[in-house]
Amino acid sequence: MTQETAIVLFKEKTIRRTWDQGEWWFSVVDICAVLTESTDAGAYWRKLKQRLNTESDQPVTVCHGLKLQAQDGKQRVTDCANTEGILRIIQSIPSSKAEPFKRWLAKVGYERIREIEDPALAQERMKQLYEKKGYPKDWIDKRLRGIAIRQNLTDEWKARGLINQQDYAILTAEISKATFGMTPTEYKAHKHLPAKSGANLRDHMTELELIFSMLGEKVTTEISKNEKPDNMPAHKNVANRGGP
Image 1 (cartoon, rainbow, N blue to C red):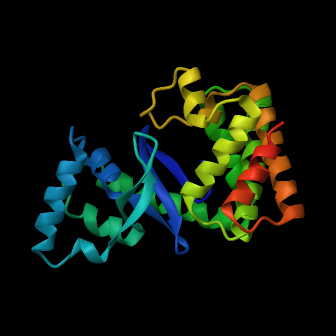
Image 2 (cartoon, helix red, strand yellow; image 1 turned 90 degrees about the vertical axis):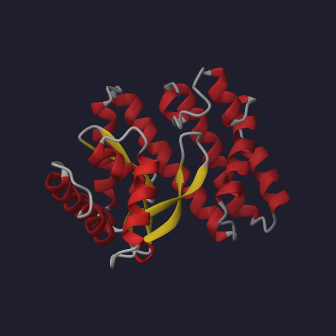
């Protein structure tokens, strides 16, 4: 979970979202699932989009295909809409949850603006989320510290010209192999996490595992800053040496 790509909960139901062009974009399929409780929200949205395309709303003007994490853990292009677009779409969905959802949507948008102005608020929100899930304080502190270190690492990669999520995944796998002797996918299997669950591996790590993960990514960041790699093989070499 990061500030740029995260999930939020509406009445205990998951809604995926991503931060793009200065605003939140929400998964339309997830919102259809929440408002309609359909067993096949994807089919519901396809039919609704087809119907709206014959009317004046034209969803293609309010929806954009953005990558979100799917159930299989992979990033897949998903129909997303910003707050204005979602409000237009839900007008066409008969649901008693529509009004509560509108209020929730406004609150989520406001919270994100505040988090940009004060990043500590984002940390506090994530802390509260983990507390609700029952994680102990010491574990939460290490998890949040790890998130900050991970953000510093991705910032370093971006500064070196890497912007592709696939490249990040490859380098993360190198650090993981050097640290634990396993790629993240192999580590998930080791912890008996379903491959297609989309579960965050680090949310299932022990405090010691989180510490080793932080160390590997912190060392990788420092080596990269010193050596300034400018191609993928060089980045992989740095990542491999970053593992404890």
